Amino acid sequence: MNLLFKALNDPTRRAILEMLKDKDMTAGEIAAQFDISWPSVSHHLDLLKQAKLVLTVKEGQFISYTLNTTVMDEIIKWLLQFSTPKN
Amino acid sequence: MNLLFKALNDPTRRAILEMLKDKDMTAGEIAAQFDISWPSVSHHLDLLKQAKLVLTVKEGQFISYTLNTTVMDEIIKWLLQFSTPKN
DNA sequence: GAAGTATTTAGACAAATGTCTAAATATGTG
DNA sequence: CACATATTTAGACATTTGTCTAAATACTTC
Image (cartoon, rainbow over all chains, first blue to last red):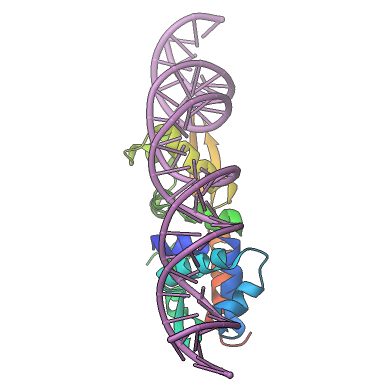
C-alpha cells in the first residue's frame, strides 16, 4: 500500500500511467514525452515497477512497459471502505 | 489531484482516515492514538484538510474532524479510467 | 479577566525525493 | 568482435517532507 501511494504521488508517474492506458510503450517512447532527462524517467518507471503498477516485457532491444490494472483495483478497494457506510 | 495523492501518501494520514471512518473525532482524540507529537498530528490533519479529505467542525472548545467521502470518489473515478478497457 | 485546556503556528533539522550528468550494461548489426 | 542504440545505475545536489520543541492562539470556566 505504501509503495502504491508513493508511486501515485507524482504527476509525471500519473501521466505515464495515463499514457500506458492507451497502448504499451517502450521506455524510450515514454521518455520522449517528457522534458526531463531519460534517467529521471527511468527512475519514475522503476518506482512504478516497484509498486507493480506497470510490468515490463523485453522486446528485443527495447523494454516495453504495460499497465497492471490488478493493482489499481487494490487501491480502489481500499478507497471504497470509506464510501460504503457499513461493510 | 496533487494534494489528494500527497495527502494519501503517508501511513499516519491513512490511519487517521480509517479512524474517522468509524466516527468523528477531535484533534486530541486523534493525536492520542499516535506516538508522535501533537503538532505532528496537527500537521497531518492540516494536509488532510488541504486535500479536503476531512472537514472540521468547531464544537465549543474542541475541533471535530469528519471524513469527506466526496473527495474519495474523485480518486476512485481517476483510478477507474484504468480498469475500463474503453471509455 | 485570569487560568486552564485544546489546538495550531513557528522554526529547526534529518531523511526522503526528484532531478541532473557521467558512466555502465544490455542487445542488435555490420 | 567492434560499434551503435536502448535503458539503467551511480553519485551528487537542491527541494520537500515528517518530526520535534517552544511558543502562540482560541475557547471555557471560575
